[in-house]
Each structure stands twice: as structure tokens, then as C-alpha cells.
Length: 97
Image (cartoon, rainbow, N blue to C red; front, side, top):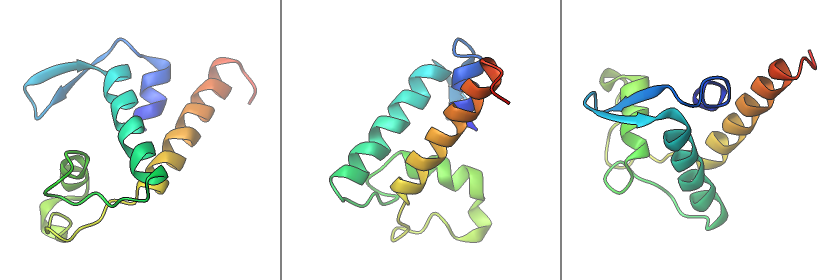
């Protein structure tokens, strides 16, 4: 979803932690770079060590227990989702489908 918005409306603003404005293209690029690095180096990203897990906590909800210190972020899944969202947006922009 974030990569789709970054391709369709890259200059729109996202609020980090509800107060810090950031362009969506910068947020998407940063998260993509972080997850790509974690995937390529085969490292895990835990809630304590990685701010991207905070986004997972917000998205999944605190009540599901996703924010426990042992929660591991599936970085390859994030990279795949980012590429799919960007591909879908570019397909829509260039009217492939």
C-alpha cells in the first residue's frame, strides 16, 4: 500500500508517530532500503532494534501481541509487497491493465 501511494502521489505527506511530517517517497524508500538490507544480510529485525516494527505494531494492533520483544519482521515479505505495490501502480499509470 505504501509503495502504491509513493508511486501515485509521491509528494504527499505522512506523519511519523503522528507529529513528524515526511514525504511519502522518502518514507517508502527508507523502509524499502531497510527491509532490503535486512533481507540481503539475513539479519532479523526485532521490535527493540528496528523502528519498522513500530509500524507493524500500529498496523496489526497492540492487542494481537505483535509488539513483543521477540517479534521478528518478515523483511523478504515486505520487499515483495513493496515491489508488487510499485508494479501495480506503474501498471495503472501506464495503462497496462
